[in-house]
Length: 238
Image 1 (cartoon, rainbow, N blue to C red):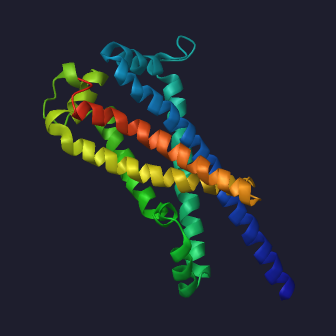
Image 2 (image 1 turned 135 degrees about the vertical axis):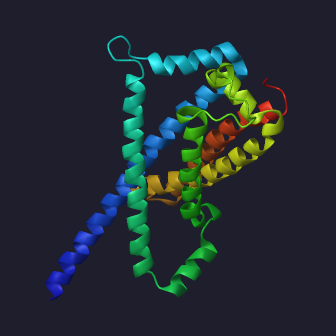
């Protein structure tokens, strides 16, 4: 009986470690993606031609060896698999923790945990909803919040961007900034957790470096994404 319990415990531990590794790996993929995506967004500061050239380039990269948007669809497939893996791993780990953790311990732990760690679940849900809206807005449907659906705007990535956040689109900027705040918190704790899972926080100094790394990643990415809508809203980019 004791042997069976030990075997089950060992399997559960290995499974938990595997799930954490899957979360860390898929999280790193997302960090690399949002870094590249942020770089592309910042092309807006170089003007309409530079931004639209970049938008077209990511659709034609790899041609003629690959069809138009071939590389883009490979990237999308990797991101979809990573998203499913990340969410599934997070849900399974959360359910296990909820079953195993006493209520008193959970309350005590929350008193010493960071805000970013306490908001991971709801922050992740917020980001998931935002990603769906973001895809509808700029890729799938191309929604222009100003109401104009002229092809000169919806088929022009730069003009769609400017019309979305400029003038009466201030509420879109607010939504975007809220999402970036959630992204920053998620990246801060997620980066530290990934370092911990990969065994890079075995000492006090390495844990401190991992926390600093989490803040750097969060501020650079969330801050970089926030610059474009803010500068459009205030008329710097038009």
